Image 1: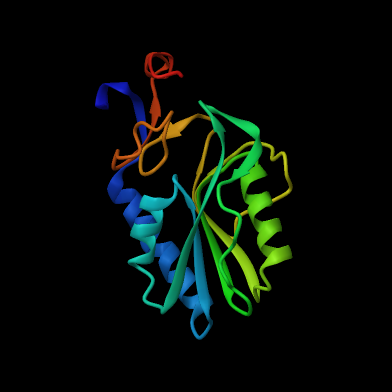
Image 2: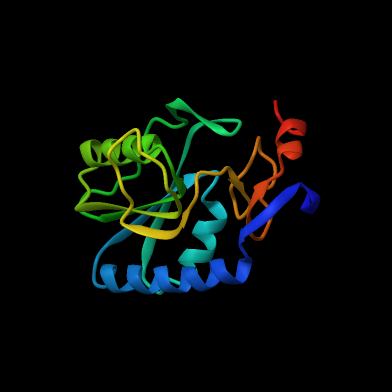
Length: 182
């Protein structure tokens, strides 16, 4: 796997240090509030685990399985893999996602949550924000890192279900992309 990485954008120690900062902000913002964290799977599960261990607040946790990618590009359609959302009436919701690029996924999730849930508030936190024009006008409230318009893997992010277990965020070689294409 290591030979498939053209370069590392963020090493594990840099990611964990940034999570300390994000957790401190989230903790300060949600102190004394009823917090529910909704993680968007599968990409955010490592980010979620490492971030939430740093947030010393009582909270509820739920996850949604949502998909919009095919290979290295967004498909333009959002697939919700479950029909019900968590009961968050009157609670403050923090959506966790791995990456914000086109904005389609975060916009669809936030829209559904705001319309159907009765939540007191809905905010979002992303590990990565790709610096590209958004298809949907949405921004994250908390951002780990800004990245260039390159396809990244590792730390939960995948290419055709591979590379999620890398402890860092890196860019694949063109050869690895061709070899692992479906």
